[in-house]
Image (cartoon, rainbow, N blue to C red; front, side):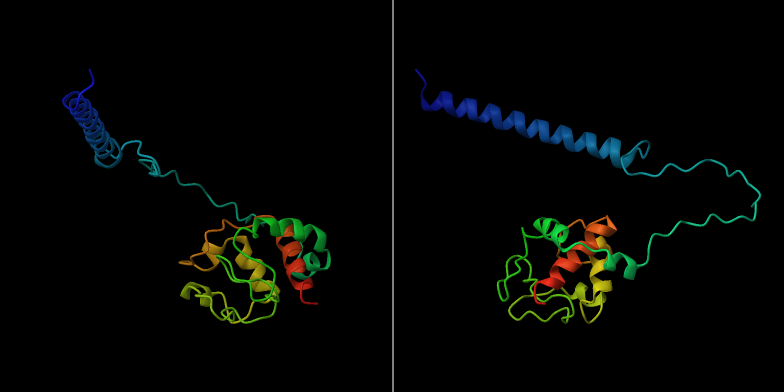
Length: 175
């Protein structure tokens, strides 16, 4: 009862419907997101006029947290080991054991592109010459911001305490 011709017609109808749906989606995207320009996602809306305001002369001062040395003095190695679990998907701590990323044994204080056999992206050379604790602190906050163009897809660690704990943990691995 279900012969080749019926199967071919059914498959053709399904493919035609899918193609029609894709063309409709493409047309709607180009019409509403790009062409109109009103309310497109990611578009910044600008006011039609600017209201001038007098400057009161008082500049707002951002409250700065503790300095880097104070943060490092209070770093917790055990907490850093827990934070490292986020890194363990791509990095290993055994010397010479590269994964998606280079091994991190002895990373604190070593040159940035020192692991032999690992292809570093050129963007990492913007960070500096050596993985100092300060360079790691900045890099770990947002790798893509610290080294634009890096192939590292990690979003970063926003909390300062997580970053210093991780640096203390990595530094403790090789004594």
